[in-house]
Amino acid sequence: MRKLPFTASRLEAIASAHPTPFHIYDEAAVRANAAAFRDAFSWNPGFREYFAVKATPNPYIVKILSGCGFGCDCSSLAELEIAARCGVVGESIMFTSNDTPAREFVRARELGAVVNLDDITHIDFLEKTCGIPELVCCRYNPGPLKSGNAIIGKPEEAKYGFTREQIFRGYAMLKEKGAKRFGIHTMVASNELDPRYFAETCEILFSLAREIEKRCGIVFSFCNIGGGVGIPYRPGQQPVDLRVLSQGVEAAYARHFSDHPPVSLYMECGRAITGPYGYLVSRVLHIKDTYRKYAGLDACMADLMRPALYGAYHEIVVPAKASQPASEVYDVTGSLCENNDKFAIARPLPRLAPGDLVVICDAGAHGHAMGFNYNGKLRSAELLLRPDGSVIQIRRAETLEDYFSTLDFSGLKPPRLIPRPRPPPRAASSIDGRAALGQFQPPRSPRPVLCRRVFAVATRPSSPSRPASPSCPRALVLHAALLRGSSPSPPAPARRFQH
Ligand SMILES: Cc1ncc(COP(=O)(O)O)c(C=O)c1O
Image (cartoon, rainbow, N blue to C red):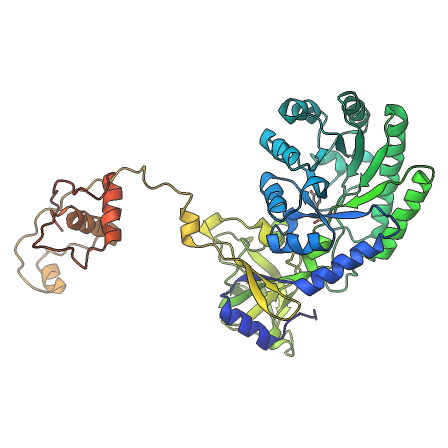
């Protein structure tokens, strides 16, 4: 079973201070892993890992990693801003975007980021938008020359990068337009566990780089082999041996660049940097026993989408029941009105009960980051387990106010208010009595009644002899004013509604 960085009782204590669901990242493990990553490539003096911010776009994580010497790989305006606000600027940012809006290129250039172009047409677009930088990079898609993998798909079906033929033209154009320093990039795998895959990719990329240099008369200062290093999500899978991966890359480097000025090797991994060191912690809300057994959690696919999106496996641990046998088989579900909202299907687990804390492992990359608001679900908090064992919140949970803050109710017309007919004199005091006399009206939904009450109260002329009623708080007055489409003061002329 997976070793967690907290005991069951420590986790209960954390969950009593921070309501579930939440993501929690193990800072000490992230730091140790970052150091191992750097060390594995120390044969290349210019080696740099640009952390793929999209994996875990949290300033604390970015700051920790930049402290470890990592740059930031950004793919959007928001990611550029996160990097900049964490003090990561200039060539410490690799801007690897696609279908890029002009203002994102502008911001990347303002920050001095390395612009990694995704398409040959982006050269003119970049030039017109904000000029060609001195240092520039192009993303190569080898198409049928390289097989992809299940997540990223076949390269020739992937939307990213220049074709082989385009990339020669691309560098020639960039040189002609004034670029002086060049890099080349490719990324053709995602969550790849076989270290040989990366050595093969380097073989293709390095040999292409040399060909481009000869044909275009340029010299590459870096090769970026992207991210895509996998992690062992399933029990029994082995982590990628970074030393083996690095040795394969080094051998390809030696074959192609032994007679070349030093070329810096760049990577932009996300998953392999933070993935195994983040956990989604959730409580069981309900146990349901129908055609299958369901353990319904207070987290849902808005907190971790990978199982629903890719059928991905994430190990689930129940720390307080770690010593109990996995005697039950559950679909572990969330509360979205979407049948894919399952963290696990037919997973053997200890017998669960409402209130149990469950830990979904390997949620540290492409986890919280992929969250969304379908069904009005709110995204969870993120916590950081510090090396000294303390826990701090590094992103608060979304609130209903956050969700509603992007909605506009103010433009809605007031509801049509249809005066109810005056009820006949009461023949009996109880509802039963009225029903018996055929006068019972089923209760109407409470909202219109509330609105009518609000209107009536809010539009009642005030007078010094009748101070504001405690049953008419300011919020209701404001609400009524909102529905009226006017400001709450001065008081609107009185309108009468029956209620
Ligand atoms: C261009 C680019 N770089 C880096 C990454 C990070 O990938 P991973 O987290 O699998 O290492 C991605 C992932 O989508 C990507 O698209």
